[in-house]
Each structure stands twice: as C-alpha cells, then as structure tokens.
Length: 98
Ligand SMILES: [Zn+2]
Image: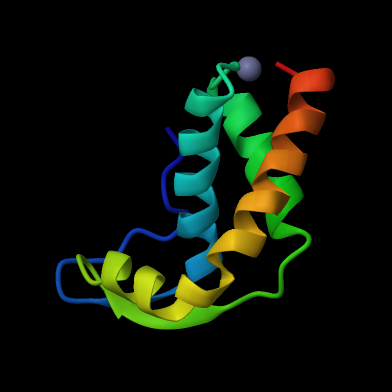
C-alpha cells in the first residue's frame, strides 16, 4: 500500500491533493475488478499516470478529516476519473514495470 507523502502530526494541519487519495482508492478498486497485479509498483505507476492528467486540487486538512473532504470535493468528477483510471490500468497491464 502507498502511504501519504505527508503524515500529519497529532494536532497538525497538512495540505493534501485530494485527487491523490481518490485516485488511489479508484486504482485499487479497479485493479481488483480487472483481476490484475496490484503490487506497490503497479499501483504507483497507475496513480502517477492518472494524476498527471488532473489539475492539482489541494485542501487543508487534519488527521481523520481527509475522507470527508475527498467525497465532498470530487463527487462530480467521479465518472470521468473512473475512465482515466481504467485507461491507466490498461497501460500498466500491457507493459508492467515491476
Ligand atoms: Zn505489479
């Protein structure tokens, strides 16, 4: 599993690109659905492919508050995102780099 690049302190705030978490969730979900390799390398490659196509969308958040933010901020983008995720997974599946 990928970890957040910025882990919050107990009381600290962090800035997070909400797409990072949303894309990661989508990638893991669709990998399972497509019955393909879900090693760290393939997950990271697929996430990078999708995230490079999206504008950054940073929010300020605290530990435990991220998931709510992700759902609130990106609900409208979900279908478009799923298409991008599937395209990225197909590329990783065709030429895995693990
Ligand atoms: Zn792999």
